[in-house]
Length: 68
Image 1: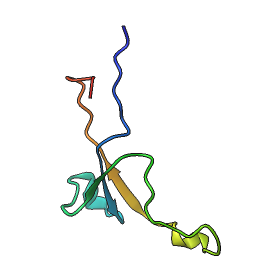
Image 2 (image 1 turned 90 degrees about the horizontal axis):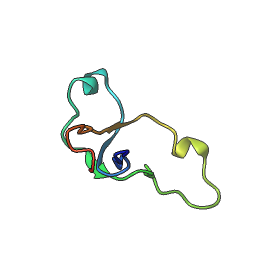
Image 3 (image 1 turned 180 degrees about the vertical axis):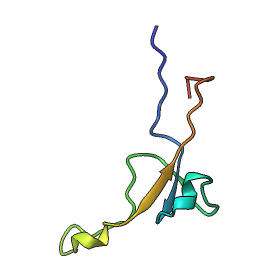
């Protein structure tokens, strides 16, 4: 039987990106679920550059406990 692992819960998020994040995720991030909105925007009259940028998400998958 196939095992299900829900991957859209419990992601770490931080605005920005640096190469050192590949070795260790920085302190000060927050836990989010996907899909995730990085900025709240008005429905009308916003510039698309308001939501464009570099953002980092990190999640560790546990193959020992696939029911997460």
